[in-house]
Image (spheres, rainbow, N blue to C red):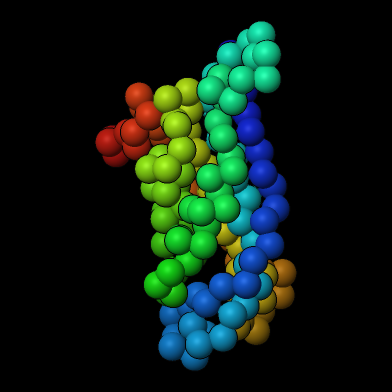
Length: 129
């Protein structure tokens, strides 16, 4: 049986976009993260039996520099950063959704969201199949 840690909404200002004009000014984005893992039972408040999501305070700012063109780049950088910095030995997969809240599109008024899901094996990103 698997367990889930979910951080549904992290609000940020980021420089992201295809055009240089989009990347010159910060714009609102939202990041959501889900991590499937095996959380040890009988925890006794032991952080080693789960995933320390406080690493997000380091990983997310690093994922935004240099300013990316694509939301996909932000999501991938966050996933790679979580695996690099965090103890992912109990993690099965990581899902990161990045939403550009106010895209420069006429018909899209409620944001654009990209979601990446990456399998983790033995604490490392699993090879693509």
